[in-house]
Image (cartoon, rainbow, N blue to C red; front, side, top):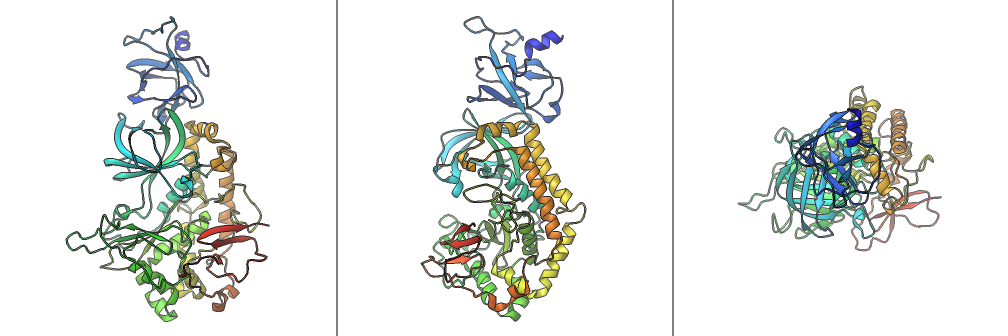
Length: 558
């Protein structure tokens, strides 16, 4: 019997192969990778570590010690299980490898514009594969420039589909984790946010509203090439947050969704002197809903503009009495805590959504994070070298400030006991079993690490993308990065525990004369500002840190 197994299974042998046109294992089609001449098949995780019999193209085949590290050579057989031969008389053989992650195969030729394609989803926990027609394009900002390699994809299916227990929708994203050497920080940080954030103020009216996105770690093929580990994710949009649609009978706008795309004025340090409801961009924001020209002929910037101008210009008495009418303060508190815990240096102002549920009822706005790659000690920018020097912004002891004018005022004068509420909420979330207990955060990171390690995806990712220019030539080493992240989290939480919110301000900082609120409404943004919106009188002898110029961050290192 053992000899029979050896004839069927030879682990880690590389031989010339003649590939089958299709290999179906346990009702799921394996996918061919032309770079390695190996097929990848997804099977339920329960088979891993077992000597098991699997159905291959309708015939039972035995496999010894099924694991992700082995490549198995199997012989093509006819419907009766007899070996088939090629024209030279040699048995037809193929090499195959196993994963338990879902496999998504994109077939088409993609670029900056939508193109027709097919998407095949092989989920080992479902009875069979499903193929859909769709339009697909590259997506992203800095991740979508010409010299990038591991692309993000936006998928627009012809019809709504429900994937992996998430919502039913036609719009989906494949997030490459392009600049993240762990590839999954965005997914991990968003899961943490989903677990800790309170529901928006309108939750009683919309109990299914989600102020975040869910996702699934998958392996992606582009035609006959394995492209790597991806996060298949929902989008933040009107449907996700259950915002009210435009009233088609009256054309009245109700729900609104805004996104900060740069730092021009998204930190709320400059008064909005005017806005144009015929345009979908305004002072560093983009309007995501309603969509100009599709949902309505004009849009409405008023709820966002009024909230920002209130945060800047209202009197102390008015601010204290009415701030809750403009901002969803419980979610603001949670965002502040989350931002500090994960050290989200790229996610205040820019990479934030602001949602209005129904402006005919209330113009209160709710924040939502987005694009969380630069978290857990990961640096954004043009290099990934980790700095451990105290004070540098990926250090676990970096003194990060939640740099909105809204929260600056709340911090400074402790309006409505804001700082006490921050501390109380933080201490609650730090309790055993709560999302911000150190063990809880580490468990979340470990969960995703084990997925890519045990499935073999981590090794495939390393082989494919190690040293690529997408990561500025850095090494992709999942084990080392996992250990780094876990160590960073322990140190970060210990550091925050020693402080109280507001974490990093001093009394002198609270001096109202310390910050002169600038007006950044002129067309020329050539001045350099610090992260609090203060205009610098000179650029000479700048201290080490981060500054804003023309809406973009610049970094000064010594």
